[in-house]
Length: 171
Image (cartoon, rainbow, N blue to C red; front, side, top):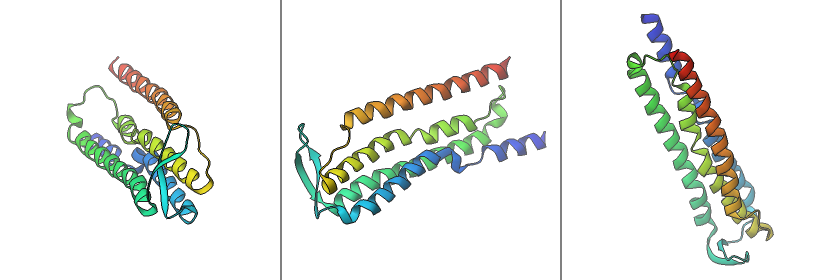
């Protein structure tokens, strides 16, 4: 019995794989900031009218801060949530009688944060590309719909797999 508890504890500790997608999106954001920083004017347009023309401006450093800070906060949130849930999974492992492993759910929970991060990343790229090259990418609403649609499909597949695993373990 002691060996099983030790193995379960070792499998449920925090792993960086639980938050790999938020980390990748954050890293891509930092790389984009490093690339575009020298190309951006001192005053950066961050809001656009429906025809694509600029409407409001802020200093370059403020725009960069407001584009990267939420990304960092979401990564920290993903770390805290998955770390806390991994600790709870170890504590309540004895109560789990269906034989399912919590690692799959921890991966879903931690990586789900990448969905809003991807939308923020696209908004940042659009702001940077307009101010550096006067070119807009896709409208933000199109990107949001695509990211949420693809994310919903992937999450649906992962949830179905988790439900099947629980169903098979309970048979």
